[in-house]
Image 1 (cartoon, rainbow, N blue to C red):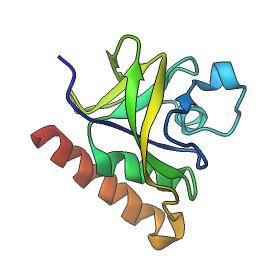
Image 2: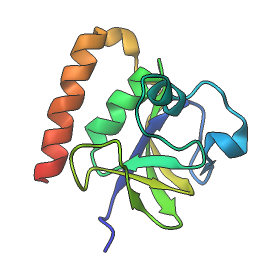
Image 3: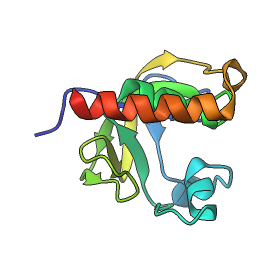
Image 4: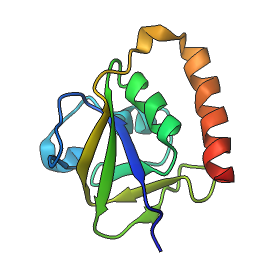
Length: 130
């Protein structure tokens, strides 16, 4: 059974009802998926990544560099994100629909990269415990 709420942090400018489509469909080159692949991680360009952790998604929005935080509805099958070491926190799906814009701009410059990464660790632990 799916948890009631999923979040996505990424490109700004989406509105309620908009579809989040994977980079393989949109042709978008600048993505966190590309960054993960460049660092040797596991990611799929034909999937959208969502999380049950609102603050986890906030960090990803910031790492997009001034991205946005969305509550989303996953569309299609949810599969556990193989790159996430914490089970039940991050998922991949074929697409998602924006339910609401939680924060239209999450400013990267509000913290250093190290501070954002520490926040990601804390937020992931909190999402696991929820």
